[in-house]
Image 1 (spheres, rainbow, N blue to C red):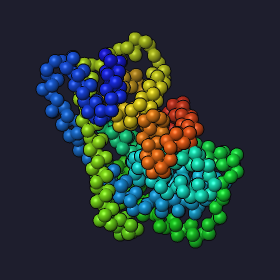
Image 2 (cartoon, one colour):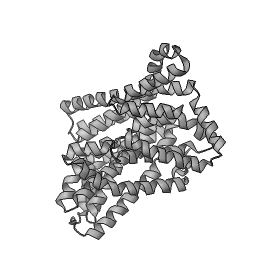
Image 3 (cartoon, rainbow, N blue to C red):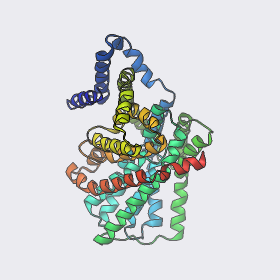
Image 4 (cartoon, helix red, strand yellow):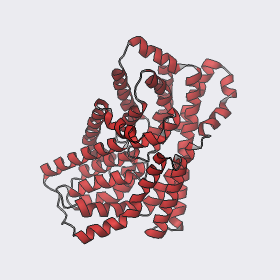
Length: 426
């Protein structure tokens, strides 16, 4: 049954129909085949139930926070500060780009927004200093994907909404893996730059220049501390934290940096409305499919199949990682989350797999999905911003896909990298 649902879904999406509508049609068809007209009668309430959640209010708020900061030139301020400290090192500008992207991830929650900002700010100076064009594109694309690993992360938020896992624990679990991925990208960048020897070094900044750039960046750097710290300490819920984040972003953009005016706020609101609408349509449609999966007991059938095969937990995890990698090539991240998780999560729990650890490797797999053709969203965003052929960007990204896959294998082999910090702080 589950194979038929996936085949029908992929066939329908191949026609170009909007993802959320396609998922809803398949869910409605599966429900009707299994339950008859009762599934049709329940459609309105099922659609509404999918988006009737207080937690989901955090999504437009986090998006709005990211939009305000992006339009306020915060990425440029952060990049300038990091470059003052690291730019004189071998491959320093590339290192600065990765570190800035990691910091930017902690104030956006979105890989697409993070990569877009990095492409605008970092690519021109990288090219001006003699860095290889394809390498620069791949570096910015791969580093941009940190936006969904380092908290706050919108996919992690959705993961918690579906599985009812602690949002605070999920956010904290992404910190160490995010740093591991950052270190891996830096190591690869240094290796490439040392071997190529083309990139021009930046002069060492003076102590005064470093301190001034850092002082200017501090208001933006306070944002992740407020949001993530507030959630994990219990001072406010994820939704309240998102609202606080928007408020702080407005204060920083309007009053501190004075780079955000009414025009920028209006543009941020329009972009937030569009992005949120797209996400909510996918969520509502996915709830229709999820309801059909639940009523037809597909998860229970899948669990029975797994148990009959006598697969060890590690083998099941490995198989699902391969499946997710393949799905990531043909579906976008939010769709995968809402299609696959309702089926997988009950099996994960039944097999005794740590759901927090699985959330981290699931999210890293989704990072890879963002830069793997043909549907990698970050690839298309960079193509639009940089106005370069997508084939050229894909060529630059492929070595970084290998780096991220190596990080995925590392996190799979050592679950403690994901679970240690939540255990210590819980």
